[in-house]
Every structure is written in C-alpha cells, then in structure tokens.
Amino acid sequence: MVGKRERKAPAAESQQVRLRLEYRELLDDYTRDVVQMCSLARLAMLHASRAVVGQDLEAAENAMTESDKIIEIHRRCEDRALLLLARQNPVATDLRQVLSYINTERDITRMGNLAKLVAKVARQHHPEPAFTADVMKTITVMAEACDRMAADAGRLIAAPKVAQARELAEADEAVDAASRGLVSRAAGPQWPHGNRAAVEIALVARYYERFADHCVGIGRHLIFMVTGVRPEEQELEGLDAPELERRFSLRK
Image (cartoon, rainbow, N blue to C red; front, side):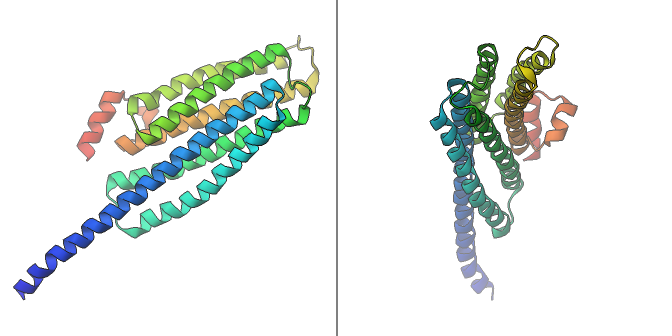
C-alpha cells in the first residue's frame, strides 16, 4: 500500500503543477485584457477631446466605437474572473489580483462611458464649436492631464508599482482645480454666454473630473493588489510607498 501511494505522488504533483501553470496563463490573459480595456478608454477620451476641441465629427464617432469595444472585453473578463475564482483555490496574491481587476474593470468601463458623453456634446454642436476659445483652453488642459493619467494607469496594470500608483492622486488635483475653475466661471455673474452653455460646461468639466477620479481608483485597486491594504484604508493609514512595500513582504 505504501508503495502504491508513493507511485501516485509524482502523478498528483504533476497534475497540480499543470493546473497551476494553466491558472497563471489564464491570469496573464486576464491582465492583457484589462490593459487593453484601459488603452481603449484612453483612446476613447482622446477621440472625444479632439471632437470637442476640433469640431471633429469622425473623432466623436471613433470615441463611441472605442467605448463599445470596452464593453465587449468587459463581458469576456467577467467570464475569466468567474473561471479563475472557481477553477482552484487561489493563493492570497492571486485572489487579490482577480478582485482588483474586477474593480478596475468597472472603473475603466465608466471611463469609456464618460468619453462617450463628451463625444455626444461635440456631436450635438457640430459643425459649430461647442464652447468659446477661452473655455477650450481649459478643456484642453484637462484632456491632456486625463490622457497622461490613463496612460499611467495602463502601465501600472501591466507592472504595478505602489509609488507611481499613489502619484495618480496628485495628478488628479490639477484636473479638479481646472474643473472648479470652469464651473465657477460659468456660474459667475459675469458669464455672458447663457444658461445652456453654463450647464454644458459644468457637465463636461464633471466628465473629465470623474474620468481622472476613476484613474485614481485604478491606482488604489492596484495598491491593494500589491500590498493587501484596502482602498478605503490607504488614505486613513497615510502609509508611504516603502512602508506599504514592507507590510506586503510581511503578508506573503
């Protein structure tokens, strides 16, 4: 009996190794899908911004298309997540990765929806400019900041780093400041362009602000993936990147 058990052990170990390799391959495929989703969200907002600033109808349509592609990949990722959670008992780091990706997908999907909303504003005004030249300057600043944040978020999904993920929150402050400035100007007594323009400016400013907020959310999910510190705890604890890395080493 002992001999039979010993002969079965190598086969069982081989099966376990094979399953583990398959699990890692599936997880790598999941990572590539989430990275692609983030790239599409960035591209969608880039097209939407070009549509608003340049009265480019084709760019508006492209923003819609890219946003729809995000939804398609998101559906595939939902199946991946279920398979990864059900296939075998994941270790803690794998479980955090899957949970982080599930939340990251939600942020990215909303980023795509926000790009679609910006594109719709441009399309409604075409071929006329959506806003005045001075407003366009501020929107361009917000659009460029959001583009950089989305690019950084995509790189972090592919290669998570705590310090860089935390920097997304700092970049978000510039977008928030620009948004507040636009809304304050449109709501002020000296605003000469009417209520409709004021409302549309406030909405578009909010779309960019929320887009940037979702980039920050992605960073927080990735910090959780690396360190195990939940997003809602990260600000409360006020931990710097080295301390977060140290805590993670203790949790492995």
